[in-house]
Length: 319
Ligand SMILES: Nc1ncnc2c1ncn2[C@@H]1O[C@H](COP(=O)(O)OP(=O)(O)O)[C@@H](O)[C@H]1O
Ligand SMILES: [Mg+2]
Image 1 (cartoon, rainbow, N blue to C red):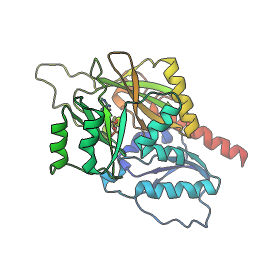
Image 2 (image 1 turned 120 degrees about the horizontal axis):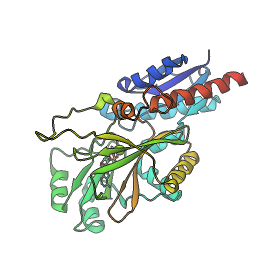
Image 3 (image 1 turned 90 degrees about the vertical axis):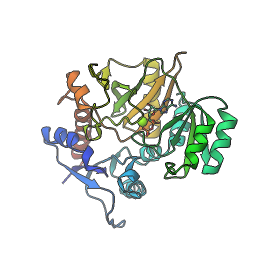
Image 4 (image 1 turned 30 degrees about the vertical axis):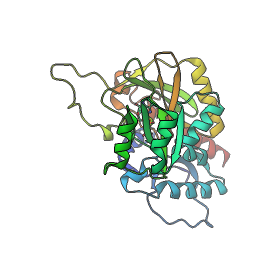
């Protein structure tokens, strides 16, 4: 039987997608790729495979899930299976340095970034490349904003690196990055499904750098100042500039990424810099509801279900 196979390692992010599949009566099954056994000489089942492996999988004790997924994707591809967000997407998902190289080669500007292997080299690199400037330290393999920190001075960066709070990046690679100061505390995340722009969402960053939009990640609104009406953290906006959208769509098509959430910041001088490509993307249900998109093909899960359903029908027609 031809089915949609969802490759993932975090069940908490599946319900919105499951609902969208079930609403359309699409046959689907999940592949939980934290562990498993695969006979590489045997053909995989028939159907469409959708890879949702996440850069942050190691933070859920699934240290080798990304490596396992890379191997499984190679097996699926060798057997000619239709894979959505295949090896090219996973390759970008787990390396911001590779994201930036691919973005820049498609004319998309990224923040000035220095790659540092070795904790002992971080301070010297910051002094050399970001002297007297605020700098962002982030892991090359990121996810959910974990480990992303702003340092206003090299001294504080040095003390952090010496402290017990320091966490080594899982792939050993640190990124030092220019701090892009937005005139308002917002970043924009543009969502793409089937390689095409779906919508963009403005995210309020005043609470910090952990911006996972899924309900499963919500941290509550306990931090709002007393007496102030809570602002909505996620708000869907009309669109993004055409030139940027076209460049991002070309970048996605060239790298084999069909579903993505791409984050950027615009600074006071009008520069727009893309700093994060998420090939495993979650959608904010409240923002979608306020925009009248819930349950429709204009919602993230709805658009994915429609897209994968179409791919499945294509396979069935060809069979
Ligand atoms: N260069 C930067 N300048 C300003 N803010 C940044 C920069 N890089 C990251 N941030 C902030 O930190 C958040 C998390 O960083 P990001 O690179 O997206 O890591 P992750 O892959 O973990 O989501 C961003 O959404 C943004 O709010
Ligand atoms: Mg991000």
